[in-house]
Length: 356
Image (cartoon, rainbow, N blue to C red):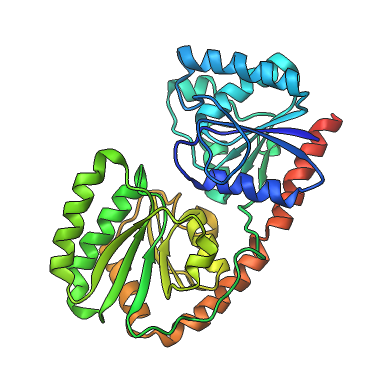
């Protein structure tokens, strides 16, 4: 099948790695074409400003995408963000092909989104929170929603021996834009307040810093490093080869797909997403982790300082738990997030639409 992935990425994000994992799992089965503002992992793609609003730029994007569909004989379009959903819905209607959406974030509810929800012939929800949002806030038919969780390549993300370094390495992993900037600032605030009670640790901040926050970021690190010494906080930017980098990390703070990939690497994870902090990923927090995409879709947002402080103390003062938590986390990912199962489920949705 000839499939078009339509995205509106300006920076590396979970939606892009989700698409990449699907395309790799389908090698030899489907031919995948890509359109996005930017992509970051070597895909061959067409660059158009899909992130721009529906009027007037979205209308031009719709015409471009419809022409692309006809030229390349695309059989199904699969969109992965709010702006791309709108363009894909119009282009699919113009060309008469099925439209599938993956809803990575509960979309905002306002007049335009209610008038033009653009969820396609089938909507793939990555967690229960998204399912509830679509049915309760948009009254989207449950029969058109498919709960299909994120998938991770378990061969690419492999457990590695704990580095066993004298000074522990804790990685704060994920984008630093949008709602994740608030999570980053929350982490610094909590760290400053409890650093005196923690052993010396290197806290590494991964992720591209937004240009408009670069100066503030440098000053924040300077201030916090003065407060937390002999521990230190350092920025390492965007990590191109995450599986290899995770081998040298003791523990991770992350939400969303970043948490999933860290768990696949058998690293203990403190769950903190755009919606708040859940604490250490373990049997007690797992139901909420599943339901909210590892803290990204918590409603209401729950940034409780005591929850993060307790998790940091538990992991850094009792490192013997780390290996046990890592093994447990890897087992859960194998059960719920194997990309092979995700790819099969998505393909089944495609086939049902092509046959109708």
